[in-house]
Image (cartoon, rainbow, N blue to C red):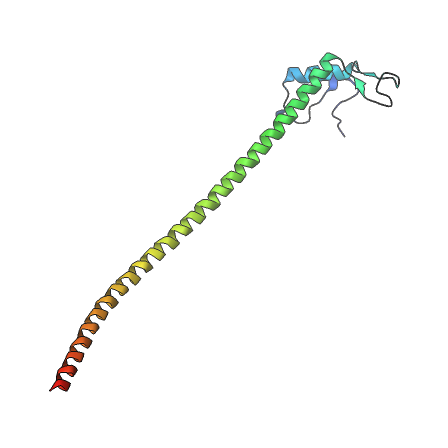
Length: 147
């Protein structure tokens, strides 16, 4: 099984070079810091942070850790942004379909409204004609009774 770091410094292997967020120079700097054993010094229990097993790092190590942390944070941020854009795109597609469906329903309702409006107009004319006919019949009946 191949390990990420081998015992010998000349045999450093990067498992997938295309996927690493570091340049070759940065990888070399990381490797050199790791190979040197680091200048990491453990704090003594009497150093003010009692019971702490944290370590003090030199400026290069701090810079390197900060750089790694920033890259990871940027990667997570890009992932969140990508997911957000995907969600917005999905929502946009869903809303466009819903909009098309609502437009179809509106068109159908408008056509039905037009049909009902026409039917109402026809019934109004018919009502006026029937009222006139009824009025004539009452007049005829009244004149027949008056004779």
